[in-house]
Image (cartoon, rainbow over all chains, first blue to last red; front, side, top):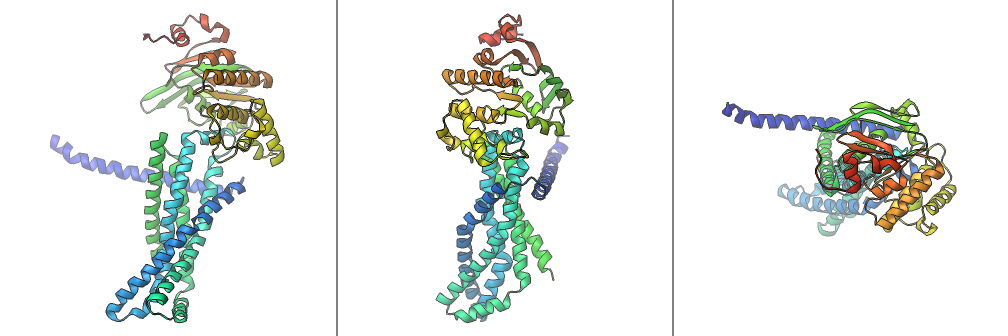
Length: 264
Length: 244
C-alpha cells in the first residue's frame, strides 16, 4: 500500500500542477477577453489612455532603440564571421534585414516591453490592490477594468507595433553602421540590398507580432496586478509572475505566429 | 434603509460570517464593533459587492442589492477607507473630485476643483493642499482628504472603515468630530466599523457587536455601558481575560 502511495504521489502532484496550469490559463483567457471587450465599449477614459500611450510608447523608445542598434550590429558581425567560412560574407545585408524584421526586432522589443512595462504595470496595479485603491475605485462607481486595464492594453496594442517597426529600422541601421564602418561594405550597396530583399509580408508580419506581444505584455501586467496577494510579498510575487508569464507567452506566440506567417 | 438578513461567508474552512442580521434606519449612524478578525471588514465588503456572500440577503430601501442596484448604490455612496486609499497618481483635489470629473453628471474641471477645495475646507485642509500628491501628506491629512472624497458628491450613505486607526488620540478626536458633524449635517445613513471606543461614543447612534460570526448585541450607543453582555463589557473595558 505504501509503495503504491509512493508511486502515486508524484503522479498526483503532476496532475495537480497540470490542472492548476489549465485553470490559470482559463482565468487569464477570461480576463483578457473582458479587458479587450472594455476597449470597445464606452465609457472610455481618454486621459488614462493618453497617459498609458506616453508611458508605454514614448518612454520605451530609448531602451528599444539601444537594444535594436546593438543587436543589429552584433548580428552583422556574426553573419560576416560565419559567412566567411563558406565565402558568403556578401549576404550580411540580407540576413541582418530578414533576421531583424522577421524575428529579432519583434521578439526583442516584446521582451524589453515585458521587462520594462509589464513589471511596472503589475507593480503599480498590485500596490493599488494592496492599498485598497481598487476597492476605492469601485465605490466611486468606476469599473477598474475600464479605468486601469483597458487603457493600458489599448496602449500596448497600439504602441508596441510602432516600437517594433522602429526597432526593425534601427536594428538594420545598426548592422549597416557596423558593416560599413568595420567590415568594408559600400553604404549604398548595403542599403540597396536591404531594401531589395525585404518584402511587404516581412514588414506587416513584424508589426502584427508587435501588436500581439504588446497586448500580451500589457494583459499580463494587468492580470497579475489585479490578482495580487497581500502585502509587499504579494506585490513582489505578482510582478515576478507577470514578467515571467509575459516573456514565456511572447516566445510561445512568436513560435506560433512564425508558423502561421512563414509556413512553407 | 439598509437591511441585512442571514449573511454568511466562509473562507476555505473558516466561517467568518455565520448569519448576520442588521438594520440601519435612514439618517442613522450605526457603529459595528468587534475584535480583530471577527469579520467586520468582510461585512462591509459583502454590502459593497467586493466579496460575494455565500448566503443571505442585503437590501437598500427595500430593494434587494444585485449588481444593477449596486451601481445605483454607488452613485449615492461615499466611503472612507482604513488607509484612506487615495490614488497616488492624482493630486489631492483630483482625488476628492474623482467622481465629479467622471460619469454622466460630470462637472467641468474648474467647477470640480472648486467643489474639491470647498470639501477640503470642510475637513480642515486649506486650498494649498489641493495640488499636493497623497504621498506628500501626513497620515492624518490623508485621512481627512479621504473623508473629503467620501463626502464630495453629498452621498446619502457613507461607510467608514476603521476611521481612526493609526492616528494619534488628538487627530482621532478631530476625525471622530468631523464624521459626527458630517453625518448629522448631511442627514446621511452611516455604517462605521471600528474597535476604537472613542469613535463609538462620538459617532454612533446605535452600536452592534460582531462576535463569532453573528451580531452578539445591538442597542443604542447610550446603552452600551449597561448592555449586560459579558463580551461587550470586556470589549469596552479592554479586559484581557478569556470568556467561555
